[in-house]
Image (cartoon, rainbow, N blue to C red; front, side, top):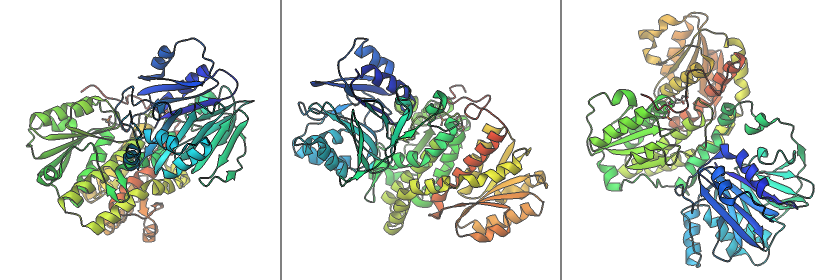
Length: 607
Ligand code: F6R
């Protein structure tokens, strides 16, 4: 996630762009940069927050009335000044661009552009945009951007300016946000409305697969083929605080809805044309084949993602795997050696228990892989390799999009290990990879059914206790669903392996207890149905999460939340979505501060 802001009009734009960037800082703040056009293009970039950029450009006025600015959440290429945007094409080309998202085919494009003589000066995927535009440019910037856009695969929003076109910003979007602000004799372009809300409240939304030509007189919308599309101007009447949350009432709700995008970013170029590539894993095929064990360590929500990873690694890569809570594991006397892969999962990369466990693992000679969402975090320094989730900044204290991103990374990792170790056959791997690729779309379909949790919340929001049950890959989802509800609604919850319920928790059930059961389609489905019968026999109320088409469950459960059908293991990434929505709907009815639940901190740096 990065923030883009652009301006074309008749006012000096330096201050407008910097103010816009500050309002987009929630989208990332690894580095920031600005490009101002005044005969030539003056580009300034700095590592750190927008304030660093402000200090660098100084208070003085600048005559430019066309410019672009960017705040970065690093994905490809480290947090350095040279990787900050705006990114220029070859020296003297006059082309500069900013980008948000992932260009999946950047390796192929970069190789070709290098052969064509282009000189690259960053490690980013983004740089291919500037060079492609330069390559296609023969005086017609719109056509150059259109041709460049048609060569890009992935999901992205980008904006381009050219020294010789002082009245134009070209931009395009595929799945990443982009919106136009319509002023009087001026036009804004941004990742989100807050960037220009103090200047204009008239907006035009850029839709997927559209190119926009912004001039002081307004914006023209084009298809990839160059056909003009009509786009109405809408008026937004949000207040400042609603704007920060993109119109959602809380950050958590915004982040729940960002999950399709977070999943898509996490997959990104790692899965391209059926090929799975995990740069950063830093283990060669020989080392992967020789692994004797995997140990996954994490805390809280990340631990639940790790539990899913354990099932996957056993299922697909056939490696003995265990998953433990970091604060427990470090005080055991763990039996590990150089052939053990230790995976530390941490959204923040700063959780002290996880960091301490990583150090312990390294001291025993294990290869430690960090899975984190934050570039440059402590975990990335205390490991042998890193794989990043790319969920963007998560503000809500209760994790949502970072969890699903971690789960998706576990899919990619387990598949990679399975393919290299030859434990998953080619046809099955192909099917699974295609289904992983479809996950953002399936997640969107799942979230779109969110209204179905409302009657359940209406009925149970005052309940004193919720039980969550699941088996196999449904168990970590039950644990995570229960954690979400207790964190944001303060309702006591328990989560249990459904088959274990009869050994204790069944004593808690009576005719007032809501019981959430993960009953997705897999080899334990029939067993879970039997467990539901046990719950019903005690008069408790079953809310089931099930797979579309398995309608028999409607005879047993009072409420069924259906998921789109996909491979059994992949349902885990979807099954959590209605449970986040249910927890949210209940917490809302209880009138609680959902973004900041009591006693919790987003990053836990104490033992
Ligand atoms: C729950 C939650 C926490 C974190 C835990 C680990 O919603 O967010 O349980 O998952 O504190 O944090 P990270 O992943 O930063 O190590």
